[in-house]
Length: 213
Image (cartoon, rainbow, N blue to C red):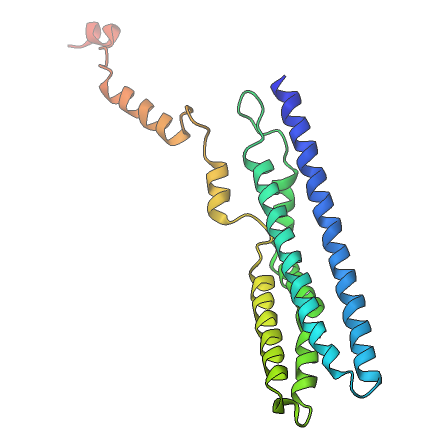
């Protein structure tokens, strides 16, 4: 009964991870389409430059949502890897720990973070830079406030994207590998065997004692 409950919980958690992953792909598509459309419209005709502020706002909002889904996916994967156990305490599912070995490779991590940087951070940076290069843009207090707000959101989103965990931390992994409560570790068992050997009296060999001079 407990095994069936664990399998059902695993299926539900994997389904949620799949949903969040598909939603992340949707966020990337929305950001690419919206920033491309707004950028093209704003540069196509003079007077539409202020639409570039929407690029910073939309990219920041979508990037923060993407990072939130990433944190939730890591939390769900960590729960599956650490908490879902068989009735005897053994691990049921090994995919999370196996995939973690692949996802933790530095080239893959750097490439993934670089792609997120290009998708969510570069478009608002370009948009804000184009606005900053316009003559007389800083003559309006409203424009200055809007530009500074967009820059603040972009920096916040960039920091969040670059610091979003892609896998469980090392200390969590160490805790997962520790023995379950109530079990005896190998080091403790070795120490107990050594103490038992030292405290057990050695019986004399009767055969050797009879042949001694």
